[in-house]
Length: 124
Image 1: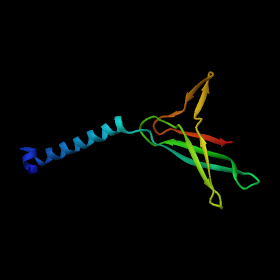
Image 2 (image 1 turned 90 degrees about the horizontal axis):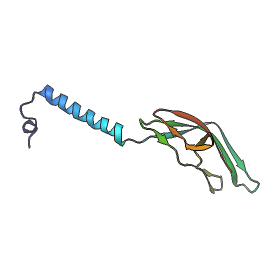
Image 3 (image 1 turned 60 degrees about the vertical axis):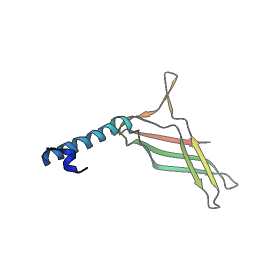
Image 4 (image 1 turned 180 degrees about the horizontal axis):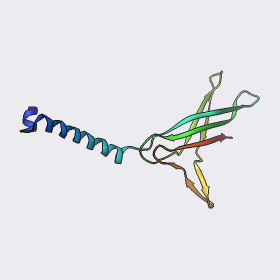
């Protein structure tokens, strides 16, 4: 099937406008319904590693910013940090308490579109 047959009697201007309108519709559909929140973690000015006498990492403190770069509301359920010491031994720290308490009720922290939250992560 030839392109001229597909568009029929439309002028080149009408073809261009139709293509732009179609692509804009697809982009709007993606942004409105399909895209999820995109929360990125940026380390802050303080990363503290507590090393035990045997050389293993026992605690990990991290100041960081969580930034939602997406158009939708985003929720963080888990943050995992993996530290490798000079002996190539891995230490994993998992933080899954992303809740704030208001009036004795735990609410899940959510970030709206382009919102930023500074957090302090402490693992024990």
